Image (cartoon, rainbow, N blue to C red; front, top):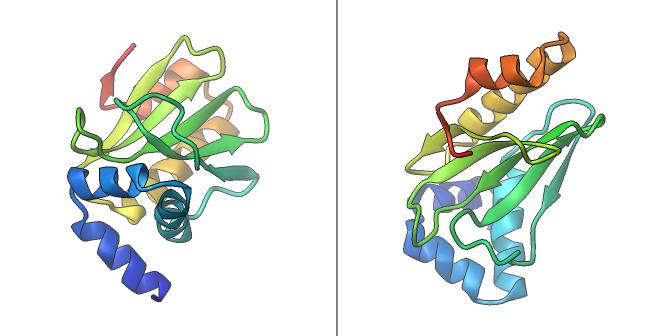
Length: 143
């Protein structure tokens, strides 16, 4: 299946189907992570790490993390779950003292994720403080 076909398939996956991928074992989860990460482009100087193991957090099952080189924060892309039926892009300060939802989408929208990551990177590179970055981008606080 081509990358374009995989991305189109992601657009149609509901929370139950994403959960089935996650729960079907490591190979299925790796396929889901590969489909997602192939559609995304981290900002220059950031790393993108796919999450293959379930870290026990079913409320926000992370598929991948985007980490700037300084490591003061990271941004996690969380897939739909049984408790949260939306794709979430979550900002997490390194100390864990700030966790904010940057974007929430009913379907996978890689252009929204890429744009949000780029805005975050630009604010960070311009010297904005963490509070200023999150105040500029956040849609709702969860901690």
